[in-house]
Length: 295
Image (cartoon, rainbow, N blue to C red; front, side, top):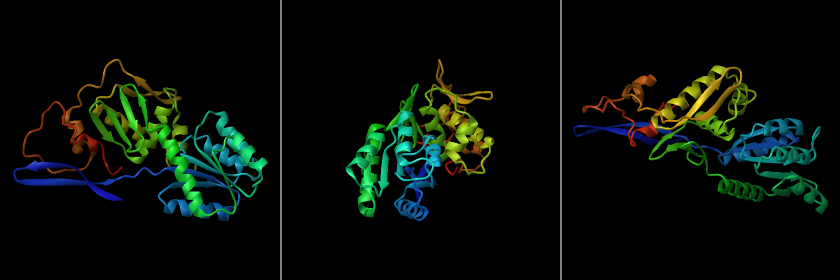
């Protein structure tokens, strides 16, 4: 993790700098492969290249995980128990999901390759394969995906998928990794309700020990950050149904200075020698760090 200055305060001739850790938003890859040794080896290889990787070892689990809609790339084996890779790919495409699919298989005949591509695969790589070719295929598919969608928008607010930044007019605020995942899912839902259970499984994972209160906490963080940039987007909660986005008739009012200062987040910063406007201290220089950057 690289440390970068979040913002600075000038007091006389002295300048105090708060340092925060710069987060990198790793691309998420799901490997569906019934040969556990191969799947785990691929996971180790891809994680060493900076990817966030999950593995499952049968087609049925692969289809369930793919339904979460949080992955940037799927790597599918073809011959698997319960549900083969072709069926998994068709299931993904039936939900109009455009995530890139790379098929890895020992079946190299023309008929097999055609069936895989017709099922929805974007590329068909036969075993055994060279890891350099595999990485080149993955990078090519992810570049293509990145060119298709760079940002998600709702109301007057845009989420930059490359930098993990929420933008509204001239203002912007950086999101933590969890905040980014929650906000991305809410934007992708298009205003439909997302239950707490769905957010928990998609952001924290099936095997996480996180509880529903975790979702409430991060929704609270996002509401404050939306307010800090003057967004007209509201995260509304509906009892027993979850959360959805709405566009308000008017933008957020100016955020009180007390809420824009780190004192309200439970951690201290150097005291300014000069007074700060009581209207709002979220200037473009400081709002990048609105919210606790270590969360």
